[in-house]
Structure formats: C-alpha cells, structure tokens
Image (cartoon, rainbow, N blue to C red; front, side, top):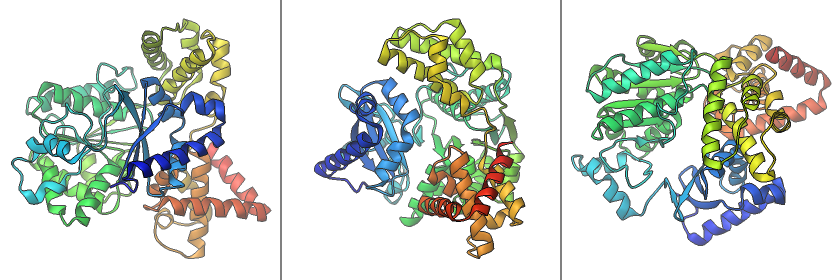
Length: 483
C-alpha cells in the first residue's frame, strides 16, 4: 500500500512535487498544464493523478509523464508509473483503489466460488463501479478509447485487424480459431489498441466472460506479489480459469515470471482457452524467454504490423483531427492534414501528439490552425525523427560487436571490468538515443534497477569528460547506430 496513507502526508507530498515542477518548467507552463492536477492516491508503485478534462489528461500523459515520474521519485523512489485520469463530477475515475467495503462488494461475484485462502491472490485494479461482474477485465487498466471502431485500418495493419476481429468473435462464441496469437511491431503501431479492442468486443458480446488483460510488468508484479504472500499456486489457478488472456509488452517479461507464463500458456492451450500476446519483436528474438515459450509462441499465428504508409498516416491524422474538431470546435484544413501525414513518419502516437499540439496551440493562443503554425509547433517532433530510430536491441548488438563481449554477458550479473564498462556504455547510449525510461532500460538490461542505469549514465558522462579517446569512441558508436 501507499507510503502516503494519511491525507495530510499526501497533501504535503503533492505540494512539494508541485513546487519542484513549477521551478522546473516555469510559472506559465505550470499554470497551463499542472495547476489543475490533483494527487488522488499512491498505491504500490503507481501515483494516480486526476485532471478536469480529457484533453488535459491526454496532454500531460503524452508530454510530461517522464517529468512527473522523475519528480515523484525524488520523494518516493519506488514509483514506477504515473497515471493521469479524468475527474468526473469532482471524483477521479478510474480509481486504483477503493475503501475496503466497496472493494469487497465489487469483487464479491468473482470470489464467491473461491476458497477464502485464495482471496488475496488476485490483486486487481478497480477501474469504476460498472466493472463488477466476475473477473472480467481484471488486471491492467483497459483504455475505453481503444476499440475496433476507433482503430484506423490500412495496408500495414489490415491483417492484424482481421485476425483480432476473428479472435473476438470466436471467443465470444466459445470457440478458438488461432491459438496462441502473437502480434509484433515497433512502438506505436497499434498492438495495444488491438488487444484492448479484443477485450472490449468480447466483454460487450458476453459480460460473463473471464477476460484478463495484463501488461508484462503487471504480470511480473502479480506473480512476485503472489510468491511473497506464499500464494503462487492460487495465482496460477486464477490465470488458468480465464477465458481470454491478453499479454502486452511481452519483451519486458523475464526471469521466473517468463517461466511461469510458459507454464500458464501451456495450460491455457491445452484447455482450449484463447491467448493473445503482443511484443516489439518476433518470438525468436525474445531472448529473455526460454526456448519452450518461444517455440509455443512461434507455433501459433504470428502477425507483424509494418510501418505506416502515407495513406494510412493521413487517415489517422484525419480521424484524430475530426475528433478534436468535434470536441473543441476548431477547423483542420486539408493542407495541414497532409503536412502532418508527410512530415511525421514515425508512428501513430506521434501523429496523435502532433494533432494534440496543434489543438493546444489553438486553445492557448487563439491562432488558426495553418501549415505555418504546424511547421512552428511540430518542428522538434519532425526533427527528432529525421534520424533513424534506435532500438535497445541495436545498441546491444553494436556494443557487443565493438567490444567483443557476448550479448548475454552484457545482460548477465558478471562484474569483471571487461564486461562492466561496455555494459555501462550501452546503458548510456540507450538513455541518450532512445525514448525509453530508466526503469525500461533496466528491465532490458537483465532486470536491473533504474538506479543502476542512472549510475551507469552518470559514470560514462564523467568518463567522457576525462577521456577524450573514450568520447570519440562513443561518438563513433552513436554514428554507427544512427546510420
């Protein structure tokens, strides 16, 4: 539970964080984006904030999540995520926790048939008062915006969309078409959207279905919590009772959790239950998983989502622009739609972000949305993607080859100097060249803590100042990665 259980302690914490943010971003930015935020609660490793409008939720989450996370960690170093949700009639929803009586009432239908010893086995996020039937949609939070209706289809993703619809129809009718299904792509191309859409469609068709959507970090959290409570068997049985299991960000699953997922996967497949998994690489490249799990995933239906072409990017921007126009009343001219589609070529989240920036500029300045405004507002977003997008996997490969250190040793616990220095340089490059957070980098480097990554980054920064040859060597590695 939270380390800030008292109302007074929570208020003091939030006042300190607000003061640091204001000092960091300045009074104008603070007033525009942070003044209306409220701290609702800190539960386990998640800080829950609320905002009065959907736009403010989206903007803060998209543009200031890292700043908020780093600021919280100055007081609470265990915080792993900051969640911003909408306040409805003065109340924040979804909530991460409820008073004991409400939580018990909400979970009563799910636990009526379970033994009392199994009650603490299934830590769940209670999102709102409507999600009370069975264990449906328990696990990680489901995004209500991510449905099949809001998914924009094109040549790059039409096969993945078709398979996702088939899975949803089959699961709703107690049949199985493909199992397991593994969807993979780089970041921001719609994997999470499809998993959320499947969950929504099946739940809408049959509210009695036991649907569990878990990101890999939540899977690990639930499993480790169950082990600590000496209730791992109950956790396993809970997972094996689900009708539809959806696992997102598979690349972050590792260690005992990955092994346990392998056992669960085998049981679910044997019991003709449906499993859908999403990751950022094909199963064969998920080296943190054992061969048996990779083989199981590869033996199912593997669906890639490729990069978006111009037509799909334009369709996505048009859809987001139409939604913003309906909500805020501004007009997006066709040339602006075309400019964004041609200039922002990375992925769907950046396209969403581009539209959000223009909406914010219009709302704050009253300036009409035009191509010159887009050029001015989106300049850094466009420039940041002119260079090749660097992945941590690329960094591991280049550093391993350059220093003649096997990749598995970079991820190992070995502390010899010939391994430690390349590992630190690889972490430094990951922080400098990717958008990954320190905890994400730590997970990709053998499950290390974010403080280890931060130490490595600072260590290499100091070495660069003191060693000209090393500085040139690291610049060479950067060029190799960006070419």
